[in-house]
Length: 320
Length: 297
Image (cartoon, rainbow over all chains, first blue to last red; front, side, top):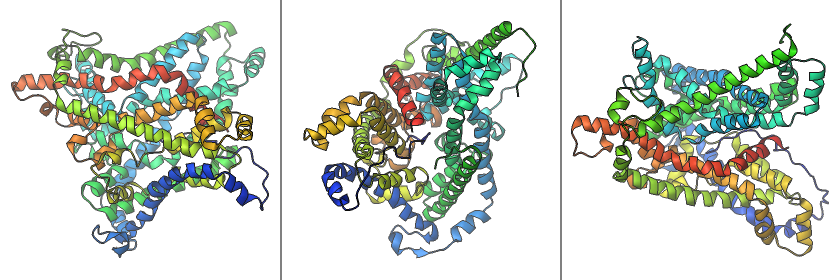
């Protein structure tokens, strides 16, 4: 499913003058429009709001035979059990650290790429650079992890052959917990930097060219022009994307982590969302893992609210 | 803050250009090299690949890996299923997204802000994996093709992009004029709005179709029946789980391992090619689509 990216568009443009008395008549006139909405709205109710109702099993001992309503209440027992479990800190640390490192390392790179593309004066070359960096975005996660396996394989992968050629000893990259995060994040950068840079390139193309001209007249160097004109020009987009990324903070890369995970790297690859999958879906502990999932979502939502508030206070750019 | 160096401005510019081009070239090589390697390896003699003789161009040219794939029933089945999921899924996606996006783009629709909030809220919280899984299970969709199509019928982000397009790229006066002429909303949508929206429709088809083509997780949780497995699950098996099982049993062990090795590269290509082939045609449009969705507003 497509994850949310920027959306500064939630606010409505044109507002319409309407008289309260004529509202029903107005609605009646647009009956066919409501009819169009019927199916999508029903779909949203069923597939997005009904699961919220189902979330109550986090506080129950869900028994599929008895159904959601029939199952007995448990209160906060599942949460308590999770906080007390020995893997709690490992899951929390892995989830937080993978995402934090991704944010620190992978987030700025598309911005840098967009700046580079913007600075290249040969338009054909910059188009090539753009189009080539988009390609990996269209490759599936399964294939990406397959390519990683091929490249990092201990005896036959190019990376280890290169290490051996220089007299080093092969490294079992994918089976060592210490390498997991590095590989995960750098392959994410490889796959997504081009695609994510599109938005920044678009924003850069909207910066007034006169500003660059004026700065050039004043003798500003290229770096200075980037720093004082390009970066401020795209700052609102950067902030919006940052907020949205943090809005998905606890869930980034879940499918890929699941595919890269094996018993040997579990120590650093076990995150909350993969744990919910393996324990919930595979082992059928629905109530327990629904509670863990809820815990995950709540942290996520709190982070989003917090960052949005900070952004609104400090930069006047925010989601709402 | 960057400090202005004391060098001449023009030579400064030149150095800057050189550095930019060097970085750009490194990026291009870093992105392309793995892709070229996979292509070359798929056409190479597997022993040479395993010995590390293939670095850039194929060595010991052979099509064995591809002919081997041709005889692999699992891959064919996966292909067929994925095509079905992609085509039917995308058609439903587009219909649903248009049905939602068009009315919500209309400034004269009372209550559309409320509905819009109702929809956008779902981008920020959800019931999560387990309640969603239980819901799909209760609806009787587990182990049916619908599990991969209906629960993902609308991507909210795409809906918002499309709505923004309708609002910003189709003149409202045109719609009002059509209404004056007694045109119904359905006819307006079908014979005026949609024909004017080809670029955004192309983008949406691409986004949704690529999504269906590449998705594996929903199939992993909802589909047990191997006859319904999409290509990505078959790939996962070949690439990540049991490599040697994918190859016929009539061979010796060493040959088996070799073939399993070589089939990996070919399988990566065969599965990614359709998406990559589609991409140059819609490329110009989707950049525009991303921009519409992100910058306007």
